[in-house]
Amino acid sequence: MKGPLDKLAHELADVVYVAYGTALVHGIDLDAVIAEIHRSNMTKLGPDGSVVRRADGKVLKGEHYEAPDVSAVLRRQGWVPSGA
Image 1 (cartoon, rainbow, N blue to C red):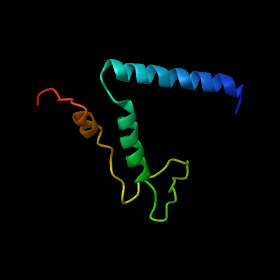
Image 2 (image 1 turned 90 degrees about the vertical axis):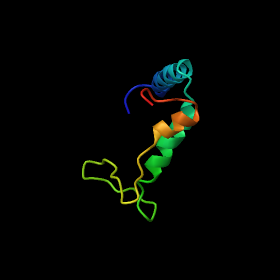
Image 3 (image 1 turned 90 degrees about the horizontal axis):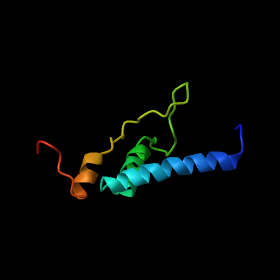
Image 4 (image 1 turned 30 degrees about the vertical axis):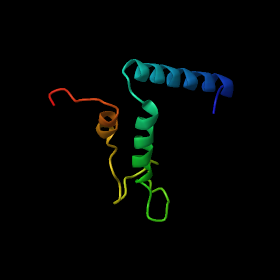
């Protein structure tokens, strides 16, 4: 890694700060959305808990992969999709 770690940490915190602020303005419980994304990502693991990667390092989706259902999380927060 190049550059001082404190500068990187500051920039990462700024990104998170903006993301949480934007979520707040729109009434989104971002922690719940992140939890759903994390749940989905963990289904990419192989049966033995290992990560399966392509030659270029990208994590592959295994046979037990479940896509995140962010819409369901938002509906539990009171969101009604337009046109519904």
